[in-house]
Image: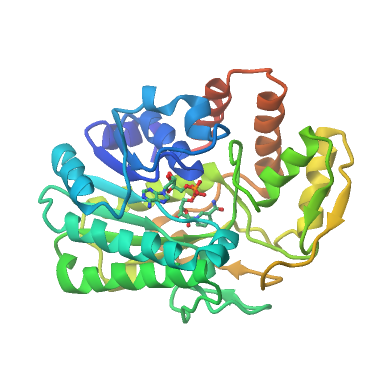
Length: 355
Ligand SMILES: NC(=O)c1ccc[n+]([C@@H]2O[C@H](COP(=O)([O-])OP(=O)(O)OC[C@H]3O[C@@H](n4cnc5c(N)ncnc54)[C@H](O)[C@@H]3O)[C@@H](O)[C@H]2O)c1
């Protein structure tokens, strides 16, 4: 679809994003604003100053930003009934594996019960056509040397992954019980995301730039691990293409879950990613190996043949460009070279030209 047609589609749509104060939520909010959608957000108020939503001052660029807990059903109901969205994108989550070991019950509450709250409220919004829920590639019964497809068995080995499997089950049960032939409902399983403005703990890119700018060693757990890294703009684009496809008609059972991963022949290792970041930043960062705090799989591979075949979506930028865009964002921002909003919006605008 050309940009003009895309803008025509989005210009009259009201999109309600949960988790808009997070890394992905902030990027997709701006991406959708750029396409002309009306964007409303609901999430916890960020606790740390180093947060993309605050850095960009996102609340000034979207239609309305609400702070609240996904578990506060009364407040969430009031806000959704007020805004009457056509589309909901559910990103609010406890999103870190490491945190899920520290706070498993909080992780299950937020990711499972929070999703159930949202589904329950969505049942009563008549004009609502579609709900997209972001889950994870970690829902699969992860084993090395296997490439997972959507019909593979789901099983989480840690509280975060298990909460995402539970989230998938909540969504499926609402589809079968209430939404079938009434609303579209999609769960999207993406891999690890690269991109500027992620300041989360225990993620390799934010850890790299924290170490870089504080002249500290970068602690890594397993330098030979590989992940299906993809750029945040490709992930947003996949979500948007899925919504465009299924807004027009209700989906069926086989169209609920979608893998979204890059089409690299081989995923790169953690150490290769670090070398590429070093080359771009002209600095050889010192590494230290920490003991693994928890069980992590060495390889994680998912295939996205389904979204290619039925939605004609594939990634627009390869791993080299993804790492370059990510590095550019942090280097410009951390060296105070550009206004962070300008850096982000220019990456979005340039990405849209690739379509
Ligand atoms: N970033 C990745 O690499 C990645 C990969 C696969 C899947 N995901 C999934 O994508 C989604 C977004 O990830 P992210 O990286 O932007 O996470 P993030 O941690 O940056 O953002 C999480 C968002 O959820 C909100 N939130 C958390 N608990 C809440 C609660 N109780 N009530 C209301 N809001 C709450 C936060 O305020 C924030 O806005 C999550 O579902 C995550 O599991 C992320």
